[in-house]
Length: 335
Image: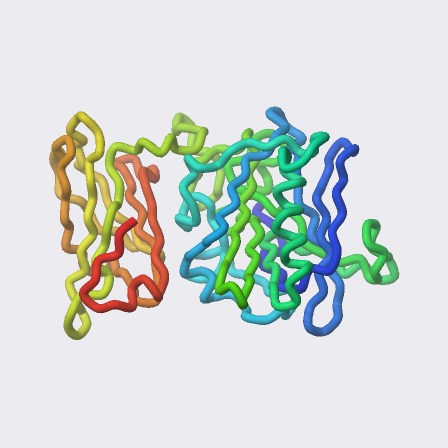
């Protein structure tokens, strides 16, 4: 079954601890919310299934509409609905990042800036040093454990969040944790810099095409992240045309490959999973398709996502845009 208690924890980072020598090491973060309640974020840095090194991506200039749905203060735990359109994370459907950009890192090695613990330490220590910074941890809640001190930082009661990683496409005994719109991750907001930093983590044993209902691996689909060389891509969108609503929005696709691609059965999906069919037939090599889209598919001016699906319903490419990018009427957002 999916995670029992999914949500996001917002707080101030006050301490951290590395666990380099255990069988299942974590990077531990001590957070405190505005009410003074302490929490521990337990971040996996090593997989119990081979290959053991985690896939990771750190985006130092993260821009996505979900940041607008997050609490703006260190309010502690907020339960989230595992559904599109809100603040829940989904590595496959949310277009949070390019899966081709993830890279494996070992958990903890001698030396400097050469492992996952070093990567996490770099950003978390920045958050600890900045009194305005807020850390958002997405995952599953545990506690509070009445009368039980936290095993790492000693505060009472024990209380925190784990599963700070992709939570779908699992195999073996972890398959029961699968679900959609319940992935974990870390977002760090530095208001004085007007900057969001996002850290996404996944196990190499997890699949990157999953069922829209169960989050289980789609058998026969590619199990690895994309190569970054998808033949057809979303390259631009006019999301805020000139004139009163309803305007005629336009999505631009490019066949970047050297061969024609048959778009029969392909479609676009918006943030709410509404779809719009593509015209049947081939798109020539190097050709651009400007597609005027319409209801129920919609690109809101408050930010959104655009996902390209093939005839089998598998994700080919996806992008996102923020309210700031959509604010200029008549301007086309490029990706």
